[in-house]
Amino acid sequence: METYTTLLFESADGVATITLHRPERLNAFTVHMHEELRHAFAAIEADRSVRAVVLTGSGRGFCAGQDLGERGAIDPAHPPDLGVGLDKNFNPLVRTIRKLDRPVVCAVNGVAAGAGANVALACDIVIAARSASFIQAFARIGLVPDCGGTWFLPRTVGSARAAALALLAEPLTAERAEAWGLIYKCVDDEALMGEARSLASHLATRPTRTLALIKLALQASSGNSLDGQLDLERDLQRVAGKTYDFSEGVRAFLEKREARFEGR
Image (cartoon, rainbow, N blue to C red; front, side, top):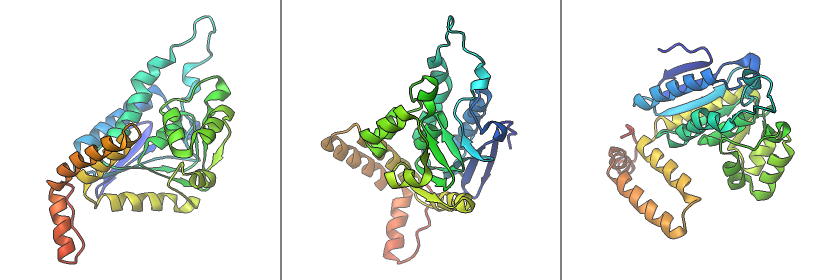
């Protein structure tokens, strides 16, 4: 098992758990953390025994976004090109989560700010501790929401709330995030990891290939017309119909028993 310095990684019973592990800095992203995240997700992609993923943070925060201390003071005469870091690190991370052919459950254990909030929103199912909060903190330091924030927010909470979250940069409690439809569920702090692992363990017993197709269909829907989406559903259903798990699901239904999906 690979040893990481900014992550904790474990894999058991079909579920891989990635824990952002810089608690003294609220698990803020660094270049090295991005390198380790790339390695961890590559290991998951290569390991077909992993059928679901949990992403969480250690300590009292999920992720405070980019570690500004890594960059140091900004010289106005020589401003950095922040697009380079997005192209190299943050955008590939969001794309990896979205394209992963297994479901990713995010367990937000504390504050999720800036890029940390939007990486959480990139996951397939987001649950949060009652004490957690989501902050589009970018405007506080003169930046634009990134990591897909301006794409996720209007599609989950609507344009009016998205604009307020981005422009005001105020914290949104986990309870309100659930009520607004930003996340799936808010749970008591002590129940968070048990709930996340239970969800992931359940997903790990489901028809994995089909879940990947469902992810693909849902992500494509916002850019498709109804006709385009109907055609995509037809094409994906053709793929699903040829999987072992579909035949097993039908057999189990006819035999009145629980299906034993193998993820193929």
